Image 1 (cartoon, rainbow, N blue to C red):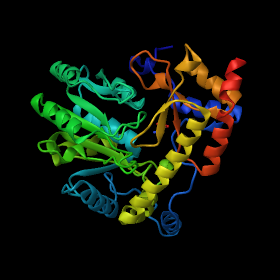
Image 2: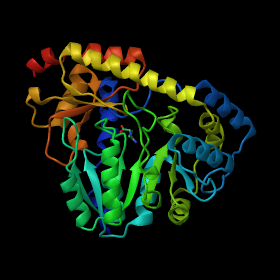
Image 3: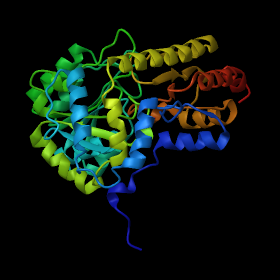
Image 4: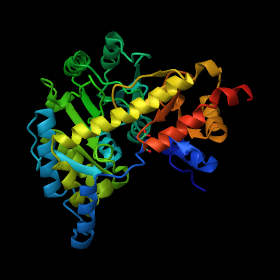
Length: 388
Ligand code: GLN
């Protein structure tokens, strides 16, 4: 038989999705793959019911339904302070996974270099491989996850075409400061590079941290490709509604890539989600309060058990330090944890370029009772580890 493609030969299964499979296999509480186990807002569900009867049920405009783009432009203008043209500066995609892929395909050529901060969300590696681009990793150093400006500049100096910025960061929960974003902007401008942002956690922040939109920094509008989604903000990860916002020159190209990749996002789901995009500030304040409650509940539990962790500033993950267990393989550790302790986490090595087996990632977008059950199971971790 002919060989399959070289480009995809090095692909491994997504470790995040694999951990969900393992969790189900052992009947563990699944704190691995990040998705809420609570319902989306009722108003959105009511609109979904209406859309199921009234439609639309056929293709929307390939780059997104008009009313969805208008509502999205309005919402993003409100939070970012930028002017956004719903007709020329937005493409609605099937989740921000497609948004990032389309952005990468629209700007890179095979052999181009793309800067990725490590730890990183695992899809970025796959995006780079599919585009034939080479990732250049710049470490975010734990526990504060600061980066060294000189190391970053050296990566730009190598001729990187773009930098991928996940802010707030999955998996480390870092929220980039104004100074850090200024430095990234200055380097992107100096070395004439693009920045592709992944801002899916833009509304999941813990006080006193604040989300700043890189595209709104001076000189960055024309070189920033903002990717985000409705998944986390409205607890609808299964709806696959994401988007790209950029200047017309870039969006024109992204529209074409997107058209041939997927034609478009689901029309009835866009229709129903408009309700969410029209929510007022109260919704986002309540979302923040709810996430602060979940984070605090889970971290307090980890404190009581005695498991050390790095406190997240945003997003809904916590990197927990497992170095005291002396494990040489965090994947095996996570399998053991799911099987014996009945809690599933993602091994940190899925996110770090650097060789490390010191962290596992829990996510806490869960109902109180789910978090309590996970904590109850985790309270046995030391006892069970002694018997390993
Ligand atoms: N973003 C989520 C995570 O990091 C879900 C990933 C996925 O399965 N698409 O866990």
